[in-house]
Image 1 (cartoon, rainbow, N blue to C red):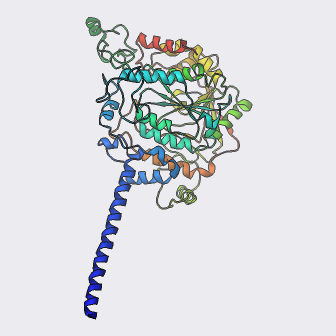
Image 2: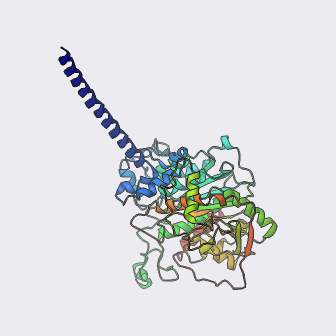
Image 3: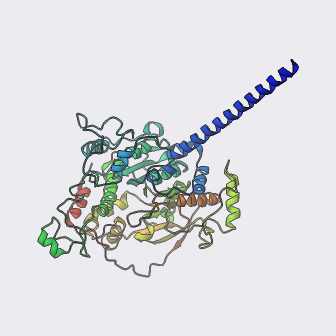
Length: 522
């Protein structure tokens, strides 16, 4: 009997051990699947990568997540949804009709259920137009009940948004970590109505938020001006052939003999519209006198950008009254916030970051190309404003805008599809005082976009640059929040050369639309 019991115990033990191993294996598989689904929902792996583009580098993704506080992961996550029809629409700005399955607009012209919250797919064009009109008419300020009304001297941050959702997610994460962000009004200006973008923006809960929508977009005018109509002259058609064909804009090619392309003209129109809208048309900014900072969806800010902007504003009043542009950004490809050993500094910074191993994220940029850039982290440079250098993270106030707006004819008639080159033109030919910029030598606004109007790559939503910028800012943490600024003045003896425009803006319809935008008031 004792032998029988021993056999039974061994058999029972074996069954228990097998069940135990099976349970552990099941738990492992469930945990692995959950982790994969969780990462698939992050902004690091949404939209573009689901559609077959190359995935991001695993190390970059891990580094980015490690340096984002857990509470902000919600801004990097997408709700699962069927994006088949949505993606087909979003990938083609000139889609002629409704997205598949959108159905007719509801009675009364309002948006279909879920259209504004991000649940569902992009609705048809007439419904989008109705939604845009409603948004722009209501001028609703989200979170105003929590953070109070906008103070006259507070900062307004305006973000120009198209469709690059991944970059926008990371910009929002960087804004959320900025000191005193709860005091600003954050305005998102859209030229594409996108339910998923709307859902993300409306989830922002760390400051006052407003959405405005450019009403003359390609999306809402797919077959007519300001979009491209079938009767428009193709870009490269010769004028002689255009006159024979009798296409709509045959008499108005640009400086270089090319006809307009709506995807390029839209950016200048949108920039001019949002500036007019914020300064002259919104009730919330009627009495606003503080600086307005202009960002784009593929920018990334340092946590002390508001502190530095205040410091620049104060320094202007006392030491540079002719400075009318504050510039926080740079297009330099390499940044160095410190003058010592970069690897040691990075390791020290990583050790200060709770829960992140110093060995898990190695610096990947060459920090030696500009070894002195941040040795004097409190330095700012005073220089004549140059469009190609000082157009990122630029801020100015209402008095500067008033002078710009008075030069609308110069801005709107200048044959260049770039808004910044057009500002350069009015600075040299119209403004009573040329634009002079105070530029931080240590940038607080970074460019993380791999692609844009002029540049395309196979994978336009790579996280490599995002990861690098995060590392640079983290390593620079001890150099942030300077107590004062030291100004250096660039010699202005060399006369700025008057430049010929880049073209793309020869069509008189663009000139008139631009002028009409400036004629609209509250």
